[in-house]
Image (cartoon, rainbow, N blue to C red):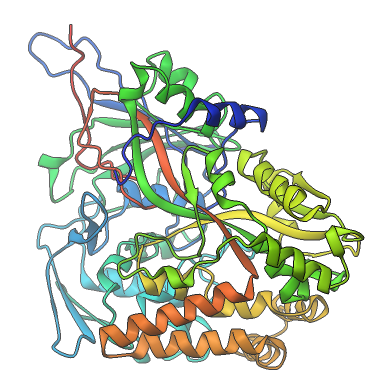
Length: 601
């Protein structure tokens, strides 16, 4: 932006003292690599005059935000979802179902293909305009238009639409296969009725509609100010809060939306957000323990320390099963990791129980599907088998790890999980392994690049998403992602060149990229795509689930992405904060409903 100023599943788990000792030995620190913000908060009550109620001010800290466009993958989209914009539906308190948002009610057709949303008559934008069905249709047309709003990059800055939503024609429109909007299943029937069609019955559709990508935008403003519609002097939003001040790289202030339809449940008078470069880990708990903030995301060392303190332990709260940690294969001029048996050996050699023991917010993660997904089947899991891992390496010509090149684990921050992972490889396979910690911006660039011949390994990351099969198998490490990662390094380079070719039309570019995948992606990745497509189109729920389980197992067997941990998200929350419901989502909680009680005298 151009202007300088913009107007518990587990409960609190207690760890053995040995865990703390191991964790300290491995250099404790936090990491937030998936698209989330690590928040902290502050209350400021003021003295008030006479019987006037004290001002309700909540102060938070966030990773720095350059944009808050919910249709673009950045930290900002999660801030948008906390209360700046509001969708048709919102998540309930524990994130297991939906509650009415802008839509006061909805109906589903008997065949499960059409959702009809009835919008509130009193839903308004912050400028007083009514929120209409046409606003949603226009917003979704922008979302599905190739390149609209994108800021570049392979992940951060990319279009945020989740394919698991399964809206009819959306994928084809987004890929440029069609530019006929009438083929997309979104239609404003009248001012207050929006109709959305899905490709096939989609049990997780309503929860998928709570993703930030499905939030509405005030399109008149977006079109009038295409470059600066998000700046505080222009932005028009429909959530319980509006952006009042935004100082680039410094701070943001939110105040109540004067036209919000449910003011009785908006209790905060102001939300003050400090924008911190590089996130909020490290010394983030210092202001909390100085009574300067009310909410703070906890790094590993702080979790251990605070849970060991009788007083502070009462402040620790958990959003369970939020994400999974994975290792993604780096492309390299050295083709060693293009051998699935080598990747399998490295996966089987990970001591996930040990890795989980050194981090208080994790448990062994043996699949890329979180264990809280309804119908989870442990047959998809990858179990440790050190003997088999050693056999595979010996068969490949590296008995006892002799002659095996050094394995690198590329990460955006120093992290105890990373150190424990490389330690597993050293101990169990006798190979050289190291953590390669770089700045987050360097990580984003290098993880998509082809590495030099003397550099092989994985990059460390984490993903979060709605705990359902379409999201976990169809969107997070989707079939297309697996196809792309299965490409040999030289073909990946060719693929990227086509992807970046500005002389091609969107349709031409996508056709050429699809042709490369068709010819060069692995057979297993094509089979995975077929299974997911069958699952998405299955009418019978049991058949659908069985197909997703089969697809998930096939994805694990390729070992292109290696699961390591399932992670909870820990916060310290001051007892004066009321109405805060932590959910297994990257936005963690909504600001609506939060209030600050008076301190006990």
